[in-house]
Structures are given as structure tokens and as C-alpha cells.
Length: 115
Length: 117
Image (cartoon, rainbow over all chains, first blue to last red; front, side, top):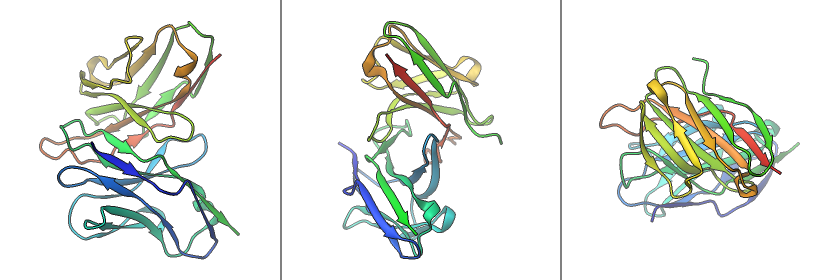
């Protein structure tokens, strides 16, 4: 079965420090991986995706993610956190069992950036 | 591009009532997805449309749930005889899928939060 795990319910970081939000996946075949961010009472906003190619993917708002096939991980990173980055972050993998394109999400990680 | 819009944003209803939600996707997008998100969880797939055809439904979608996408444009999700367990955020997403390249980004609406009393 395909799945995504986000092992941390919450990540706390001081403003200006680097941040990492962890994600591991389990999927048959080549993984198509995504990160989304959700602000309170808002829908999910796309940050970045990995389909193929360079293992370091750059996305919106200064975020990047590193794909590691051997560790089946796709951690989200940012060199310098902002208070405005505080939100709920979701890692997702595209279902590879058919052609639906449906996304399978992790349970989410709350990022708290303190001034 | 006005994004994906959902209406209403919030719905409070009594147990046993029927509710209907609407989603307007990005205009040129041919795929439309419905997800459900409960507190502390990630969104879970409910169903999706390729143009007007509903091609897959999750086991989460009981017989009380029905979705339509007439003419391949907006979509509605109806829940009949609502139960307290239906309380959740219902998210709609759309994407443009090109044949043989189903890897495109899904863009989400702000969601409809349903509370069943």
C-alpha cells in the first residue's frame, strides 16, 4: 500500500534559523511527490513537486526539498525561517496504482516559527 | 485565473438534513477532485472527475454521498441524511491532465467546513 509519513506533529524553530520538515514515503514504482502548505481556514497551497531529475527541488517562498531515493524521503527545507512561514505543512505522493492522479497525504506537520 | 472556488465556506446543519456543496474549478482544468479533511489529519480522497465522467469513488464515499459534474464544469457534492461523523472540511481541487502525463499540480479551493449538530 502506498503511504506518506510525517513523523513530527510539530516543528519549532526560531526566526532566521534553518528549518526542516520531514517526510518519508512508500510507493510502488517511481514516486511523484508534493509539498503543500495550509494556513488557518484556507485551502492547500502548492509549494513544490518532484517528478524526476535533480534531487534538490526549489519551490515557492524560498522553500526547497531534497529527494532521497535510498532513504525514501522528501524533506522540506528552508535556509532562513520567517514568522510568516508558521502554518500546517503536508507532504503527498501521487497514487501510482492507476491513472486517477489522486494524492495520498501525510497527517501534516505544524511549523511554528518564533520571533 | 481566478483559482478554485468553493461555496459555501461554512455550513452548519442538523443531523438528518441534506447538504450540497459547490466547486468551481480553474476554467481550463479537465480533472476535478473531492477530498475530505478531518481535524488533525491530511486530506483523504473521495472521488474525481475527468471532464463530466466520474471515474473513481473511494470507499469513504457511502451511499449517502453523491457527486456530479454536469457539462464538465462546476461540480456539486451532496450528502443526504447527514450524520455527526460527516463533520469535516470538504476540499475541491482541479488540475489539467495531459494524456500520458498525469503528474500535474492539483490546485485546491479554500474548502467547505461542515458541522453537523
